[in-house]
Image 1: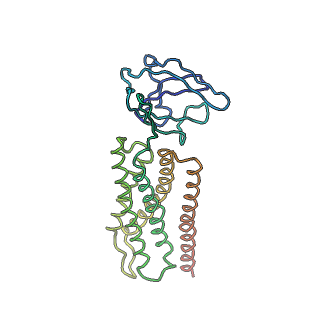
Image 2: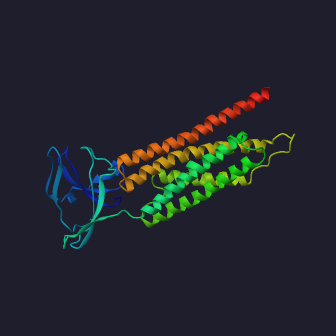
Image 3: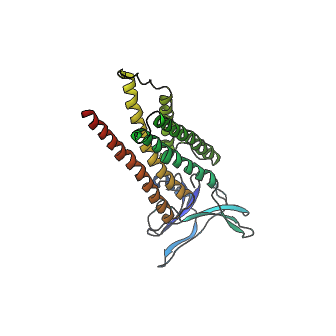
Length: 296
């Protein structure tokens, strides 16, 4: 847990030491100063089947989290080799009363909130936004008239409404858990996407109108169309990356098995592949057909 302390054993180095957990990357997981390395009777060995680590720790030490004789919350984790790295699924929290010996596994909180965050993000960026793009690019498959535009506007509006809720959940529960806002790549990308999406929606609302039949588009209208498409493609690509990153973060936070995360990841990319193929191939086909008809 970030901001906490840990006793870490490295079998390859035959070391058991106290560490400060400054973050999830190895560069900020650092051994405590030598003056704080007060563990007693330390040992770590691999017996061919198990890695066994032993140590004795003083319960109350200056500048460190105190271990109570009553209720405590401990976290354990292990990797799969001798290299210090971030553990994905091999970890858990345990509540332990050192007086009575009673213990129970502690569930990581707010699982439903983060699950809702992920599901709504998928519908926003994995369903509604691709459908909005497809309704524009594949408009020749729809009845003539404003139906394509109504679908395009409706899907985009619904996606943005979902995204506002997704963003609000993230900010609210990040604060509730006492974590730092906009600290990792996923959080920073979420903020950037929220700002870009707000510009995109505002641009759609206050767009320059289409000229009357027979009139040429103004420079402002042409510039808006280019900017709208470029920003839309950028947001869609960011959304695809952001959702997969979110699956990985959820798997880490709630100890989802590697096979479970892998299966969900495959299903996700299959869906995204289908959506992308419809946009790229379908849009390209109708663009080519339109140019071909113009030449005729």
